[in-house]
Length: 217
Image (cartoon, rainbow, N blue to C red; front, side, top):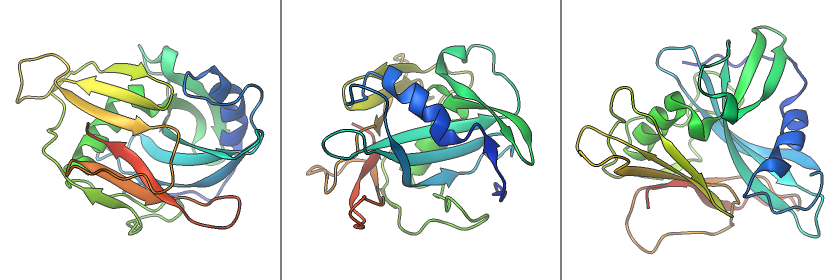
């Protein structure tokens, strides 16, 4: 289980995201965002090496608040081949220098997200160690664990990021798909019974809307 440390990160995650978010295709703003943390949850890396957080941030800079889902992985060393997904580096008060990556490109996140959407992994509380997050609701499907040594294909659109990958059940490259819903929409739901995860976040008006975070289209 991941241990949550009560400490600081310099620069802070929101500082790194303020610079990184406007470079994303799915960012709706036209200038520098004004970000606040709005919720999210964590996943465990069974190997205990990689921190995994699905962070929700809200941009208050525009005419209306926009909530974004930013899954991130935290690593103790640079990963060869993931430079294009690097959000930035930060000095952790306990663990030292950490490399923060856009998790949509990170195989460790993709494996755990696939297990989560099949009901084989459990969402963990964002701020408390060894505590499941019971507010997260999963409708499980039949997505299989990515094949060993897989290389994901990641495509950003205006509102989401699609992650295609290989599994053992198919000979077709990129046969499996996980969608990260980048711009969160309150009350979003699926009419069809397909694998998805919905969870709440904190809105600036004090409400706690729910929406789809991950799905398997």
